[in-house]
Image (cartoon, rainbow, N blue to C red; front, side, top):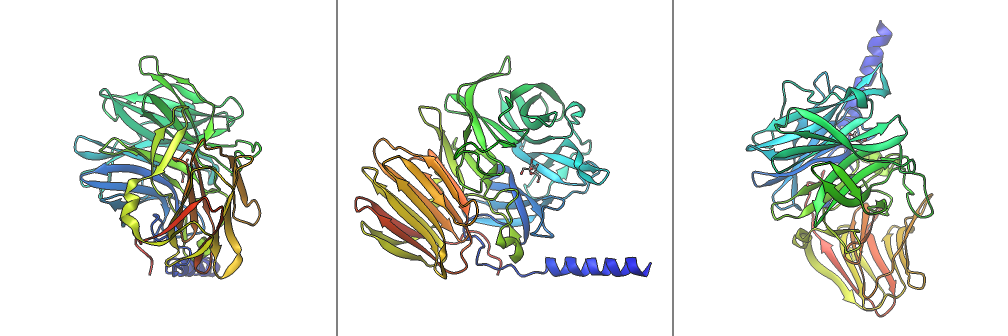
Amino acid sequence: MIKIKEICKLLLLLLCYESEAHVETRYYPRYHIAPLFGWMNDPNGFSFFKCVYHLFFQYNPYSSKSPGITNWGHVVSKNLVDWSHEPIAMKPDEYYDKDGVFSGCAIVENGELVIFYTGNVNLENNSYMHREVQALAYSKNGINITKYANNPIIKGNHFQPNFRDPKVWKEDYIYYMVLGNSLNDTFGRVLLYQSRNLINWEYQTVLAQSNGTLGYMWECPDFFKLGNYYVLLFSPQGIKPQGDKYRNLYQVGYFVGEFDKETKYFNILTEFREVNRGHDFYATQTMLDKSGRRLMVAWNDMWGQSYPESNEGFKGELTFITELSLSSDLRLIQKPIRELRKLIVKKLFSGKCSADVLLPDKTGKAIIRASNAKDFTLYVQDASNNSNKVTVQYNSKIGYVTLNRGGEDGIRGAEYKPSTDLCLVMLVDASSVELFFGKGELTFASRFFPNGDIIIRQEIHEAYNFTVYMIRRSVPFPE
Ligand code: FRU
């Protein structure tokens, strides 16, 4: 009896110790969304309601070391770049979500923010054996959220145990929902449901499925119209590496095709393509903004990575938001949203010669541009340790880009052969680097962990124009 009491005391002490832990700021982002303390994974419920943008996220408020039993964290913004934190939006407090308020989405209907998410329940204390159901919640003010009394709305008995991450949209008075699923733990797939009232949902079809080479489970599906086509975006688990492709534990990829609403047939016109070629990009979430832009955000991290920030009070951040479009050959183009301009404080450097540029607050936007593609090398370097750096290199002869962050598995690479100009936009923020080549047809997102100041150093061909701007803080800082 005494023993149990002692153990409980010790556990409580450990919990208190961690929840009061100080968050170190050397790796903490200045303009990317991150938890003030604790663990973050997928972005959820990206939406615009009553003049405010809402972004929710998978959140463990008690520890930065494990996802724990996830809650929905919540940040809001009026302009998509200046964000503030709100109280936890949803907790795992119902019988059907007691082991995790998993990922989902939000739409605005009938003057309310309507939320769909997955309730997770572990069976027999075994996290592999679990049951996932779809649940509904709503809010009149976007902050206080009420779970629907008759949840779950979809039990999906035939589709257990991997049946999650609802994404809902409305077209011609009908609501559609896509869900991530696995057939026999072997074939990842996306299921399509339909409803006329947001509560009663009917299963329609398998929208797309792995042919055996595209993973055993597809998480976080999203399906939307872009230009004249439909894009199916999803996060497959279990794709084997192939040369320089699929090097991360899990990927985000897409198909572009045509969708027939009558027959519910998705006619896929492209091969499967990875959305981002860096180390840290997963579980995307998109929304259509009021001006018709399709905006995308992802978890700027990856399952299986243990980064040093988790010893300093926080884990995970979101990518910078991008605007999506399609190229004429049906590739996804991702451009940092134009609101980025609001964050630019001053020009730190502009010229055509090699230079070392110190970033005053570990933040920067660098642009390199040339009318003809030539070789270049760019370093994002820890000023306190020359060997801790990200090296970005372009080899014009073979038309190939590499990003090397050092350490084990440091290199990611991709073919890149611009027909005329070469342009690279690079966003740096304390512990992340995001690269956008050309109009955004090739992107990389990778974390790296400089202890000291950050210097951008370029050894470029003189044909290149090189410009570096400082970016201001726009997210709350744990001080
Ligand atoms: C993706 C994911 C989702 C799930 C959530 C749980 O990273 O595994 O499929 O809903 O994370 O946190």
